[in-house]
Image 1 (cartoon, rainbow, N blue to C red):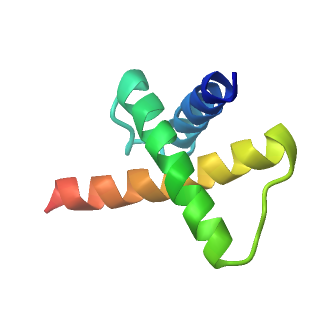
Image 2: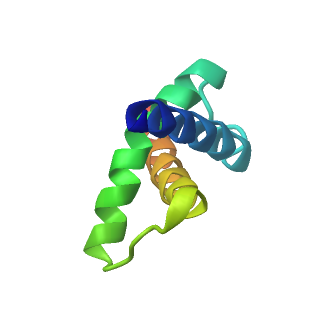
Length: 80
């Protein structure tokens, strides 16, 4: 059950990141995939900063921040 919730939160985070990063998204499906991978990145960055997510909203914020970072990195690499 936790895996399904993780995938849903990652997908929503990718969709939100695509909306926030206007013009830097890669389509809905790719953004959802980036959101799932970005949730790992967000968790890693938050742990480095000593922050912790509490509840579904905290996990969504963490995943969205990670997805935004990942979208920025991928779009920067794609430009080169």
